[in-house]
Structures are given as structure tokens and as C-alpha cells.
Length: 435
Image (cartoon, rainbow, N blue to C red; front, side, top):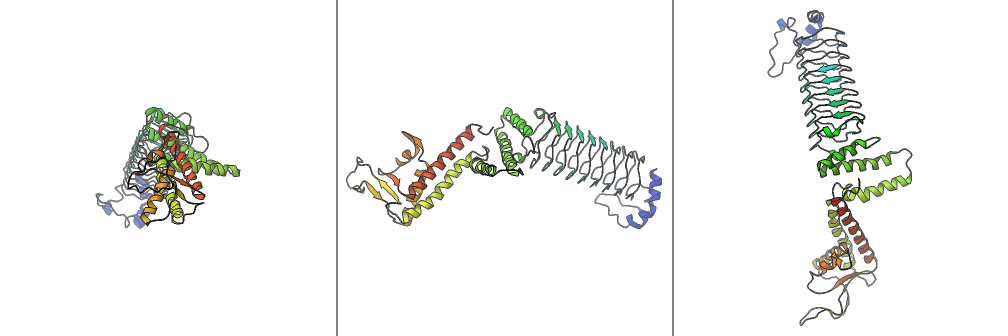
């Protein structure tokens, strides 16, 4: 059958293929006089091979672009580096076929049987594998970018370091499969089943992780993955909650926080995406974004709250510097000396208890503004437990600062912000307030 097929395409080979064959490095040199006795490099583009029996055929480097192979039997065929661009392989038997480095871009492999098939480094970009069976196969380093794997059954298969980005895996069943190091960016996994598989070091950016209830994440490895915080859901976060509980049970606090961020961030997005959203929904989302996401990323980065306190100290210091450069009694910073303070001989302490700070040298004024900002930020405490009072004990002389007018209002705002940020740091660092 293979011989008759090649003979039928003899004219195509003569007119098109022979002058365009460019062997790669290490490929055998083509003897054009023997091209028809050797099935390798055969040009079978657009060939009608429906239900053809090509079992065990040696078709390395062959061109099947656009060919009709529906229902064909390719079991055991050698198709290394062959080209199947936009070919039709519905219900095709491709068991034990060697597709290593083959090009199956945009091919139709619906309901195909890929068992013990070698697809290492193959190109399956935009390939349709709806309800295909992929079992005991080698898919490592393959390119499945944009592929459609809806309802596919992937079992006991090695797909490590493969690229599945932007592919559709809805209703797929993935069991006993290695996906370590795989690129799963923007994969749609709605209602997919994952059991006893390995996703270590995979890229999960923007993956719709809304699995079937039949999934079992307790038997699946999902460690050291990339972009865990960017996981998404459409309707229900049940799979993300299950994944977070898995990390919590295993004591992986960083991963647990990443999943919490993914859940809360997506909930906030869904609130804004609702077509019938109300004005109150927008206000609520804005509040959550400022109060929880900007401050600690929903507990993912507790240290961000402490950094914010540090940045606010410098920001408010600029405001206080303006007040110190143009002081007024009703809008300035006063230095208050206690009446019972100790005044020793040759002391430079003023005799007045109340003293409005006037501008001096530029650096001394900047230091005053920065110091007052620090005191305002840490004006935190209760009774004798007051951080600001502890800081004042580092001074050489005994005095306190007291603002008036709008400076007092600004100082109060800074103190409230600092108290809130410190509370957010403590709650998220030591607890789980967003579970």
C-alpha cells in the first residue's frame, strides 16, 4: 500500500519535493535516483489516506501536510521529523509511533490513540487532541502551545519540560503523569481531573485551576512551582482552597500565602467584572485593594507593611519640613520642656517651657522634620508602653514635640496609618486573617 501511495505522488515529488529538500545536520544525504525506492522524505501532502494501513512504515522526514489520515493505522511507524501540518488524524491509531521532532502543528488528532507514542520535542502547536487517549507516552520537551485537549485522557505519561501554554484542558483526565518543569501558563483546567501526578517546578501563571471534584491533590506533587499567586478560578475557588489546605498540612507557609492571595485577588476581580455591579461593589473593591492588597498582598508579603511605615516616614518628613521652613504659632511644631527638668551648669536649655521651633540651618531643619516624622509614626502605645516615649529617651536633653494646627492633623493621620500597618504586619505574619 505504501509503495502504491508513493507511486501515485511521483509527479508531486518530481515537481516540488526534490529541489526543496534541505537535509539537516546529521541527516543522511539524499540519493535522488533512489527516492522512490526509499519511503523517507516522501511527499504525501494532501494525500487521501483514509483508513490506510501504514503499520510499521519507515516514513522519516516525510511530508503529510494537509493529508487525510482519518481512521488510518500508523501503529509502530517511524515518523521521526515528519511533517503533519494541518493533517487530519481523527480516530487514527498512532500507538508506538516515533514522532520525535515531528511537526504536527494545527493537526486534527481528535479521538486518536497515542499509546507508547514518542512525541519528544515534537511541535503540536494549536493541535486538536479532543478526547484523545495519551497513555504510556513520551511528551517531554514537546510544544503543545494553544493545543486543544478537551476531554483528553493523559495517563502514565512523561510530559516534563513541555510547553502547554494557552492550551485547553477542560474535562481532561491527568493521572500518573509527570508535568514537572512544564509551562502551563493560561491553561484552562476547568473540570479537569488530576490524580497522582507531578507538577513540581511547573509555571502556573494565570492557570484556571478549577478542577473536578474527582481530583485528588493529596496524591499530586505541586512544589516549587512558578507564579503560584497567579492561579485563577471562574466560578468556585474549591480547588484553590483544597490546594491551600494541602500546603498548610505540609507546613509550606509561603505557598499557602500565595494561594490565599490568588483566591482573594480573584474574588476582588470577579466583584468588578459583574455586569450588574453596583457602585457599592466598586467602593468595596477599592477599599480591599488599598487596605489589604497594597499593604500586605492579602498576607502574602507581611514585610510590605513595615516597609510602608518606613516610606511614609520620609514622605511625611517632607510635609513637616514645609511647616518648619515657615513656622506659625497656629501651624507649627513646638518643643515642650517639662518644668521639673534638670538644668545643670552651663546648660544650653532655654528657660521657657514652650518653644516654637524656628528654621535654622538646612540640615538641622531636615533632621528635625525627619525626627518628628519618626516620633509621629511610632506614637503607638498604651499607658507606659509607648514606643515614641522610648525613642525620646535617646535625646541629650529632656523635651517633647507638640504640633499645632494642620500639622497636628497630618501627624495624627500618620500615627493612624502606622498603627494600622503595624497591626496588619502582626496579624498576617503570626496569623491567617484572610482564610
